[in-house]
Amino acid sequence: MTTAHPASVTEPARQTPILGEFDVVVLGGGPAGMTAAAAAARHGCRTLLIERYGFLGGMGTAAGVTNFCGLHANVFGDNRRVVHGLADELLATLEKLGGLCEPHRMFQDKIMAQAYDNAAYKLAADDLVVSSGSQLLFHAQAAGVLMRSPGEIAALLVETKSGRAAVVGRIYIDCSGDGDMAAAAGVPYEKGDGHGGMLYPSTMFRVNNVDPARAGRAWEHFGRLMEEAARDGRRFARKTPIVRPQKNPVEWRANVTQLSNPDGTAIDGTDAWQLSEGELQGRRQARDFFEFLREYAPGFDASYILEIAPQVGIRETRRIVGEYQLTEDDVLGCASFEDTIGVNGWPVEAHVAGDIVFKFVDVPNVRGFNHLPYRMLLPLGVDNLLVAGRCASMTHMGQSAARVTGPCFAMGQAAGTAAALSLRAGVAPRRLDVADLQRVLERDGAYLGRDM
Image (tube, rainbow, N blue to C red; front, side, top):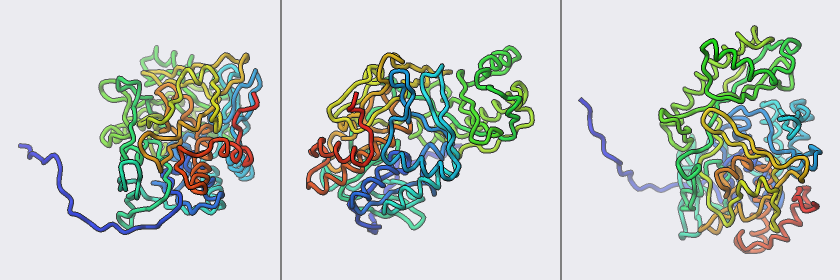
């Protein structure tokens, strides 16, 4: 016999203590959040960065990505780094710590990515934010907002080990990845392709004790080995595996899993039950693929699983609707915008059922990157809020490209700088003089792609 439960309960009213008052409050310590906080603080704002884990890096650390995508673009056949500014400082620290690999070429030299060591990334991210003067609040999760009016956030509510608290800011920046603060504030948002289909998440893992001499360029052969294993009865959740060595060639990262619901749709990272099932499913798939590696891949027979990422790697949930939505056509057409605040050189990367589909620009015949317009950081309806990172204003397929680390670094630095300049000018971010913002970003080393 089951007991019926009420649809809801009524919580008693409460007096919530104010944790602090700041000029700029940033939610989420991924690549967008860390550069947003550092930029705002360096421009004189009392800044707080709120992160739910005890470390920064977002999916790059918590989901074990261990590989920067989108730092580079194929510019008329020349693979070069196109994301600069605060990203330069972060990478320089990673290099000094010995935790940064040389960029590696992918997909017949069409693009480059750059692997890194997770621990070094955490240290470098700490250095970037702390040296800027921004305060950090770890182990805090957004629980809602209080609105002064329909168009103005009065406070962000957070849950911490000290209990619930309110954080008061003048300007807020949502870099949560899931658009948590924006959604709570009533900003319109979209999910997926309009038919419920989001980009599939993955569980990343790393293996150690690989024999690099025997493994060789194994990434070129996994497709064939998987076909052989499939003939022997093995099943794989996804084609197009991405399995590459790390800084130490005995350690390899594996991006091979795909997490779905029983009906085949992608796990929704904003649904607590689906996310819980996704964690279990991801670890099962990681174990299955590891067993395949040991049995079929030369050099992996004595390897072991070094780490399964602390959380599922989410690619897409909420995307806010802003003053402009970056589209697939913008990415593939290398679009230019007068209000550019950075660039994206990563291709369209559609994680579809059972596979990944990449769509590249016409390399090497084009400049290889699209501008990122300031308007994609400006949510509709709320004036003292900016949104940066994978939850910024993009279409489903536009986001599949510009959600990666490089453009998130660029969006974050632009958002933090815009917040500071808006406060200095006494205007809402949507009424900021974009030319002033662009001058400051370029003075601070950011690349806006205006020279071609």
